[in-house]
Image (cartoon, rainbow, N blue to C red; front, side, top):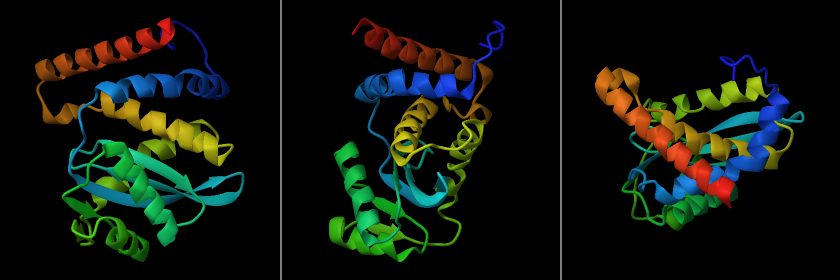
Length: 198
């Protein structure tokens, strides 16, 4: 858009995301491979209309976002709700769960996934803590979220699209990066074309 001299406001982006985002993301989810079997979980607070909420996020060992959930609390019932959402979305359990020392995680895991290994070692969960940075940037660009539902809808779609285009450029040669980037654009074109025909 910028290269074509088109100025787009944050409100326009918000409307596009509301109209097209979830449909595109659903198309991408249908064809994506199952994500990793080691889950890194973390929660971070976000302000929505002056009220503190918690953004729960899970990423796998490759740094791909598995799922997110925006809630008002961070107690055991909130953790259980997040675990249930993860299990339903992945339709499989993990081999290992890595979290910080929040007791809600241990209590919820004990009820829903008692046989899964659980680690709370210091610094081991940095992978998930760093994954909050793109969400923070989007939050600032959009001048904060307007409602819990809007934050949930936008951040879910943002994570799916980010997984598609986050290729780890520093880990590969330019040739391989171009191949993977081209595949990502082909997948995006396919998802948007199917939705536009519907």
